[in-house]
Length: 334
Image 1: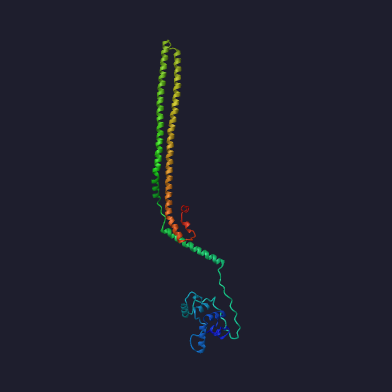
Image 2 (image 1 turned 180 degrees about the horizontal axis):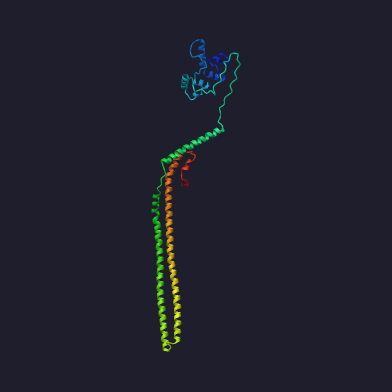
């Protein structure tokens, strides 16, 4: 059994030269039996390893300031120390301060002040957080760029346009044909009215001419029977009839012209209406095709970017959202 530890006695002076009281007491409590046995053998001449302050365990190395052995095993640490003398392993900032070996009459050495762990400053904490965030962003960015390189988005615009045209062209062609059928009926009606108007005009012209000629003939016969064929009265009467006939004929021609011009304006209006309708249907068909192309693009983006987003979420469950910069706005709206 080891003797009680006497800080001012011979044991401390011979076994722990240069050690502080706290470290020596702690080591004595842990290895006192072996240290005492070594000491007894040394003073009795029995041989063996004399303790002269040399470390005999990993704990001794750490207490002596060889912090480089903190993560080493017991055997490995001692073997390295015996081979290298602990070169490069000692931390001089925490090594125990040597003290003079006390004598029996020396006054007790004051106990060393306790050491407290150093806590990081606010700046260090913020810097560590920022560094960790940047590392996370860098990992995400590298993964995202590699994914897009390996899986690029491809969309055949021309093929999509052909597909949309094939879809919508029959519908708008049918609309145009239905409209043109109705328009053709309107045009035929106007043409029939023009023909009818011309026929009426021809008949009225003939009737008016015959009526006038008959009236003149009857008047001449009457004047001849009265012996006034060459009289001035005859000429006056026939002249009045001619003027009246001319006025009626002019009025009839004017009415015919107004009606005919009205029908011509209808024909022109129908042609303009048809042109407007053609352009309208062409524009609607073009818009439908463009909408079909956009719909096919969105479907292609959904098929491409949905697995991309799912793979990202599996890879980075708590990611910083860096994928938003790699997704189109039209996809993010859905």
